[in-house]
Amino acid sequence: MALLDVTHLSIHFGGVKAVQDVSFSIDAGIVYSVIGPNGAGKTTLFNLITGVYKPTHGEIRLDGESIGGRSPDELARRGVARTFQNLQICMNMSAIENVMVGAHLRLDRNLIKAALRFPGLRRRDAALRDEALELMRFVGLDKFADARADAMPYGALKRLEIARALAMKPRVIFLDEPAAGLNPKETIEVDHLVRKVADSGITVVLVEHDMKMVMNLSDRILVLDYGKKLAEGTGAEVRRNPDVIAAYLGAHA
Image (tube, rainbow, N blue to C red; front, side):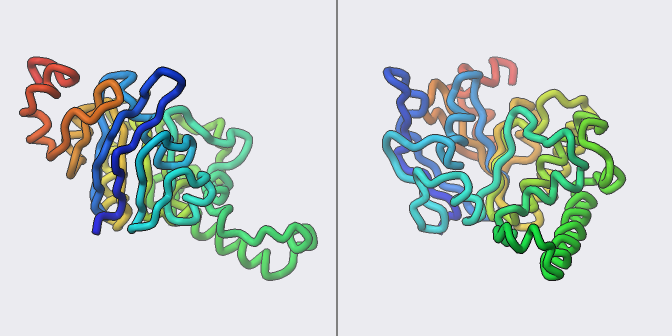
């Protein structure tokens, strides 16, 4: 059974059909990329699967369980994590505090205990800090642990967002343009990190415009055009597809 199954998924905004009858399956532990021209529906597809939007039609299943229309916090508790095109970092917090925020769904929400600072909560916070530091090492940012986020380079902040998403202990992580705005060195760092995440057993679903990165990383690729599924396959299959060449990659791809 696939980890994620999407069947006949559609969403309409008034008369605009942003995603139309899209179906695909994603196996566990792979890198699955979604590509297409601007306006193809890539981020809208992410928003549907991660609970930002409710589908007009279709079904989304995670490990056989229907999750379409569930809220983002419900999905997070089921192992779905997400980053966004634009940074969603708390700039007035330290880097390690940002990562600890990612574990908030696992925290005890009893505000009275939190106010009294029961010993168990102090131990929990210490354990979470250790876990966050280990994640910062994993993404190559341990030297920034106590730095304020607003003092960090942009490329480091992109990896910090990934660390925060990993703090949720996801089964599948959706990365929306993780290399956007990065220089070549930073792009290579993110490239290596995405593969490292997949190698750890977490399924990665990627939207990215850097085609070299997509072709290097992806086990499978879905191509969207005007909200519809244009093609799906390996990198080699997608590169040879004449419809994809015409719509996105260009005649000399």
